[in-house]
Length: 427
Image (tube, rainbow, N blue to C red; front, side, top):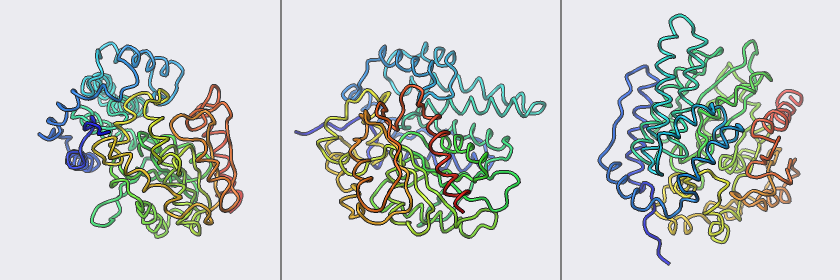
């Protein structure tokens, strides 16, 4: 069966828009003026997107609005940190599944916070910092899960500017590092715990929709443990190159760089990935087994996920808020679902010959009720190769979340203690 071209960028269109976004990003971090560039290709794609976007949506607009508000009210992902009243206000200005309409509503809320932050900064840097963060959260949700329309690309650019302002007002501030890699640049966010000489490092990998800015914000929790955090996008998102087998060499290059720094201890690194990001943390646990003190895997794809049988059954999951299929296509640079299904098996860790090989120490986290990633992938990792630790929530959904076991609770009560044991206690 042939599938029509789906509502996402073709590889060429997507790369054009990404290049524009990257140029804006570099200007933002250099202190320049933000310039939003909407390419003719992106505008052309948007017209196609409007014609076909309903095919893979799992909710009507009223259903999506209700679910979005419900998740905001209970602080659930992907609305963690957003104020329920702000969410209610944004949703009141959206009347369809149109991506640019979505982005516009969240940008309007973000603009209010950003304007207030700028007025506060000369006299109250703490209030300005908090409002820049609120602006960033709203802009980020405007581009969520991927910036696959002109409006969403604009919201992403605004999010990066707001995050840069938030990051420079933090204590300690976030340092943006840029490392040459195969003719391009690896962009990462470094945070160091105050008063700690040569702290160990968590290499924090973004996921399919939770990018390095979100990971860096959560990663501040490691600073309380005397551990530095280096947040970087996973391949295919943000500033990172396209997701392809072997793309973990981006992270190997980052480890090389961290070993050259005298202010952090590059010989003590644990890598952490969440969701799709933990596919890459798992790959890294194999290929960098000798240079890592540990790796955290949390509901990432391993093998069964990449097979057509699972993909056919999971494309309509309602566990993911919306645009599940479009986000996958964006990350992997595929023009259609059929192309995606044909490409996926090449990403399998089993196909790569990695399963069963030695790894660094690993913590595997997952939920038995996960409908986005097969729980059997965690089991396959667990029962092959070297011994591993596992935390499994029998009632858990994706990333182990359920009820009181929220994303934050798992981070604070499961992930941080395990990493402390590898980097501090076990040093």
